[in-house]
Length: 361
Ligand code: F6P
Image (tube, rainbow, N blue to C red; front, side, top):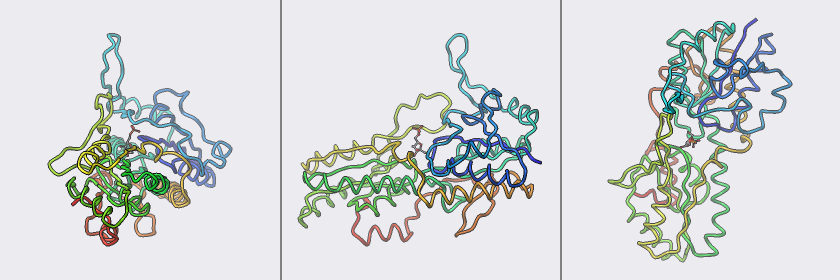
């Protein structure tokens, strides 16, 4: 008999509920109990927020987006923003308290589902002696140690769908449409959706762009009697000699700055330089919503089941990962070392170039 606790941390991603479903079912078959800590680590600090997960509670959730446990991007237990009596926000370290409560509540293992930030926190708890298994989640697909994170396929599919829809309106008005997509410092969502959604130009953080080249492509389209263009810009893309566009970075307890604004800048430049009617839009959190695709569901279910198999083997401090088409375990330490970037020699980049997509260089 074992007692397992699950957390979901950081930005949500389609497939979180499928992992929870797989963990609960895999544990049930072994006669183990599963608990879920609401909003990441809150359940360790307030017992009302620690819930027993039954088969009934997870019925059919594998197909539903979001997370039944809730999540937070500002829940770092080693530096949690807390307002003191004077109204000042201070960062408080709750990690020792969480360790004590983990033991007091009688847990044998913690399955932490998260992206790089949450897995870094998981690694720190592993260092404090918590038996922990990580599960890689993020729509950004930027974890080096796994071929794929779940959530990415759904985000790409949503972005591609949006691009398909933009074609008709761009064409009707002979316009340039600039679409800003998520992905932080990696261009995976922009590249995959841009190729699949017929973009003329894709701008990714891995290739600092020359706005002149972008405008040349639009002029070239005109020459070939194509009077509209679709531009996909990753939120972390930057012009040569330019900087990444960040939004207000004052949210206490947030490790990474919020990105955004590059799409509008690119649209303004195109409008000024080409005189073309140009509009921009930000797809934003639409990319994180909705039901997981079949690929993400299956991957998330496989990750959840693989995590429970590791618990059974007593292998902790690891993250489950996809390698080729198999599940494997990677030390958490290695999993958080670096963020995965688009390889500029990969066949996806070559495909984009071969089919005439401008990458801004
Ligand atoms: O990491 C996932 C992600 O959606 C990024 O693509 C994006 O930059 C960020 O989270 C947005 O964060 P928030 O949900 O806090 O606005």
